[in-house]
Length: 386
Image (cartoon, rainbow, N blue to C red; front, side, top):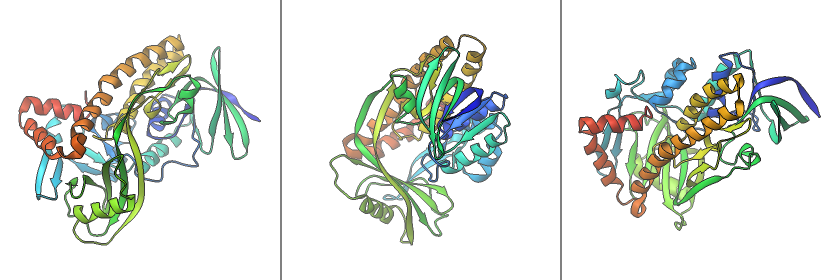
């Protein structure tokens, strides 16, 4: 078993958007950071493609926003097109927040590209190290540090850090090692996601919605690549390939297309029983899970990082356990009353009666957006500026 000779100030487990963002925040201030990721590289697929204005503010502070802007799709307003009735169901004018944010628009960018851009920026930081194919298999907290054991293709190794951060996702090893568990609910609905490539689809409105034969939403994530969102009930036995085919037939004009990625999963609203223990702390999906309705999960994780980074800086100066505990208690309350509560309400409204009310919900929201006072409140919450 080999060992790192250097004591890192911070070890981060997980090289997703949250772990990479936090590492970059700390490394830009010259903190010695080690990132451990069990996969061989960053994400290969689009996963979470939505980046709201509040998160764009954070990315701008990391010096990466210019590349994100050049690579992604910018939408100054969110307009949902009803394909079945050929009408606009909802228009959310994000551009009206120009006095609230430097980025009054929605940014669409595949998560794979988000991670690669953050990794490029992190690799330029001399104080940061990242190791892929390194799966954490053991943690030992002791006075002054946390010892981390991890397996690599060449065998086991160890590293020590003053603070350990678990950004290792819904099935977090770090969370389990803390003795914490996820509390909350699993919805009766499930969802299928698929990325499809359609040639010559650049002139089509996005996002676009159909309810024939069931709810399907299409969002353009690259020039000719679309994300399909297909919610369904647990009891619906329709095979995934058929769901995708039927959605394409009703969302798009007749065309040649191919599926490049697909996934099915359950919807959850969960939060960890604790966000910290001693010198160990959680962020992102390791700390909380929410429904993907509204596209706020990855954004909430990156915002975790923006709250956690200054707490880590303070913890490294004095009383790390108390500082991280205070951060964890505060952030847990914010998540419970913020993103988890909001996405729970949206999910229940949209999925009520198996989605039969989705047009009413969107039309009602559209009507509220025409009222100036309500419009600002809704747009700020949607944009994650609160």
